[in-house]
Image (tube, rainbow, N blue to C red; front, top):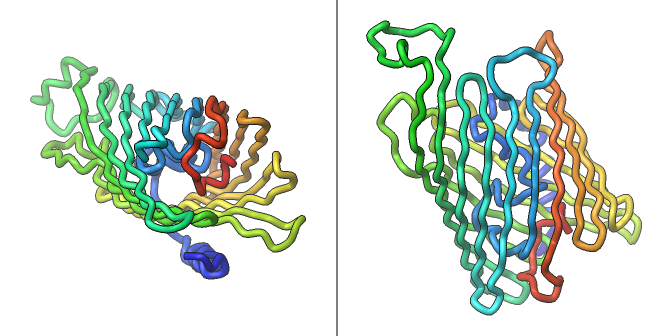
Amino acid sequence: MRNPPVYIAIFLVLITQSRICAQESLVGIGSYVFNPLLLSPSFAGQNSGTLAILQDYRFMGKSLPGSQNKNIASFDYGLVDLNLGLGLSISRGGFGPTAFSLVHLSTAYHLQVGRGETFSFGMRHNIGNVTQDLEGLNRITWSDPTVSLNTFSFFDYDLDLSGVYSARKTYVGATIFNVVPKKDELSELSPLAFTLFLGSEYEYSRNLKFAYSAAYVAPTNMGNILYLYGQYYLTPQFKVGIHKHANNWGFNTIFAQKGFNIFYKYSYLTGLTTALNSHTIGLSFDFINEKQKIETPIFFLN
């Protein structure tokens, strides 16, 4: 785990194998480098005392029904003496006829497995309301009661489980999203998904330093998605980089100063006759002194 060139090789292999095209079913997960809790509840408490607000505007430039955005507010806190992490997130958004409002409660236990090495177990409860507006959509059968109602809502609960190995310069882990089985046609709103991810930071010289990350998401209801990120440190406070999500390409940047972070991401969807642009804007503020934190390898927010 202490050999960064190995991870660079893995990262390059993933780039060459990244011809995976799918619609993003876990809306917002592509911004995990700005808010690691999106990717894994095991990160709860590692960026301790941080309040983060994220706004994700997707598929701008094309008229699609319903909301095409997601906003997320989260706060996580680490009980360092107990090696525990707690996280609370609230997310709202939607796509097409579906809209949702969810509360996410994350817990994590950070087990020291070596000098500067940690294995973190994470669990997240997702609770909230999902609404569908079916007006104007084609029905398979007119006996469907939603034909007369057009709009209906239901309570949704799901559970995410994860594990992450963290060293001083590297992290690798896995998450299972939405493990609670569903037996109806609405299960596609929260598909069971398996995710593997890794990242590292490498410093070639005093003036050449970069971080990279990859996440491979395999939902059970559609094609797999590969997320790739790379960032170059212009200064310790200012970083710029590029990313790729399936057919989406773009750039991203982060400015950090004394626990305050501003980040922006632009994505362009290729392969279509109409340009689809996506923008992600976020802010975060760290309320906890660095010495009170569990050491974290989430380099994009350092």
